Image 1 (tube, rainbow, N blue to C red):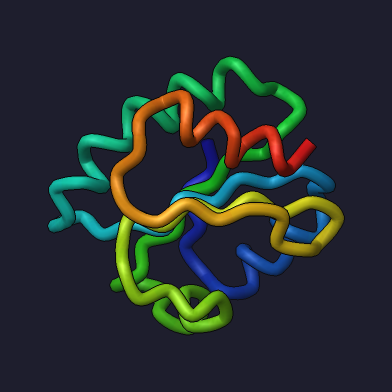
Image 2 (spheres, helix red, strand yellow; image 1 turned 180 degrees about the vertical axis):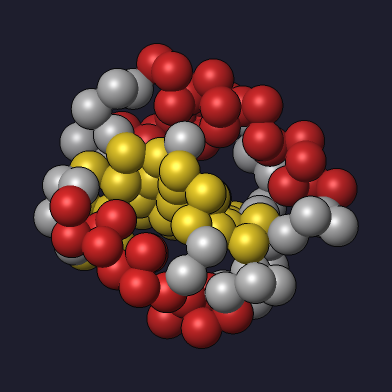
Length: 103
């Protein structure tokens, strides 16, 4: 899983990968911490999807692109277009559906 640290790095990550799952989070967010191990597990189960994490406190400009108002927000991107979005803590099965949208 890639930790995105700059807007330029985020743009490159999207352009280099056809199927992407992005976890928008913050270090202080309890539900984000609960979702993290689920996202890690899914990253191991879906090698054809590129997984990344974006800290909304560090990169608010990236979060603003998607109008993110609540975290965690998970977004699947397929061929540069948003394919699915999940907001709030969700069980593994629900997040897996969001991941599959990127395929």
